[in-house]
Length: 483
Ligand code: BYC
Image 1 (cartoon, helix red, strand yellow):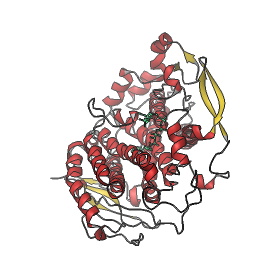
Image 2 (cartoon, helix red, strand yellow):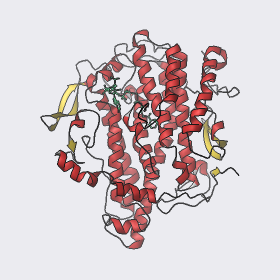
Image 3 (cartoon, rainbow, N blue to C red):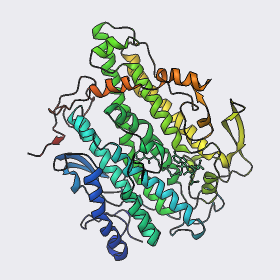
Image 4 (cartoon, protein in one colour):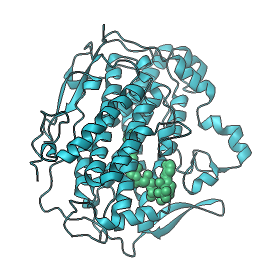
């Protein structure tokens, strides 16, 4: 087995998986690479391809010092294949095979299920880059522009990570799936991305920050669940990806936090006490808090759909097979097989939302979703509501009920308000823009999106960050445009 702590940085593809000793795999990856670059040029960031961007690149798999910072042209970014070091004598932590040695090769009986999980995960990575394609044109600062590009190159690296697994472990059909990952396109009718939220538009920077707050947080939960996998290469890949994911959520929580901070400061300076006095707040060139709440409602509900249905035999099978575990499975104290266990799930019964105990195995999507909701709710308090309270404004952002605005699962059949009260179709149509952004709300946000490209300057609607990336000073030139 190659020494996983040593990263080979000399070849075309930096890696710690011993690519040099595996010519068949190296050829497969090298022949996929040009198509990936074509995809990047076509659907990656629009413009800026020859700009120098101050980016973080993963260079090691040691927790200390795993990345370096420096100016890079994005197409020259070193998209490496990096797996967290193997744990000695790792065992399958859950399911019917619990306690057996972790698989180093694909278990034949679970091949299709495993491939599906890897393909779904892989599909989200290029999808998010496509969704964010045009945002560089309207960045509110060079700092934010650099953060967008950092997210984009790392999502592309995560695509590489899943393509590595497909090409190394799934032969010809893995190679075909790898091609398909470059063929599908977010938001298209003929060849959409696999999961709903990854076909939605990201039309402005508030949407980008909400996406990295809510949807990247789903990424965190799903990667944690896959990091528990008994298929060791998947586990190690996801463990390393989680290192990068943390920064993406930071960008989301601090991004919205900075918007809130700016709004509240402008309201205070103008003597506006009522956050619902939307017209006056908007006239200050900042985003009113109720619009931020509506955007949070939208992105939260779209993201809840990514957890699948309330009752899922797919999730039960993946757990039983030892392929996908629970969040922090290795810290849970139970039998890790869930024999006879139950879990309380909110369900729709006779048009009422009720809690019902169901077999825990079939409720695994909901358990992960509950962990997600708790994580998101605490981040809302910490990053957003504290900023509002600090400014002395009376308002709080709340996460809506899980039945609100759903397309997947039982609640797709009903309409509910953010408190979880069921609404008739007429009431929903009449009131939906109390809860979700209207075309006018969106048009207002888009009207604020003007590029700010002077080092150290920020758009009117967002506060500067308290600290720079890699401790750089406030006027650091994070992106140097091509001449
Ligand atoms: N849209 O049994 P069910 C990230 C399908 S984000 C469309 O309830 P299951 C990132 C489902 O495929 C994390 N279809 O669902 C973030 C199934 O179809 P089949 C991504 C959907 O399978 C930001 C059928 O409905 N990773 O990394 O238990 C930027 C019945 O479904 C949807 C993963 O998701 C939907 N929303 O759970 C960049 C982890 N939901 O198979 C990156 C891997 C369900 O019967 N994926 N369906 O034809 C999984 O674990 C599971 O596939 C899901 C669904 C959790 C997504």
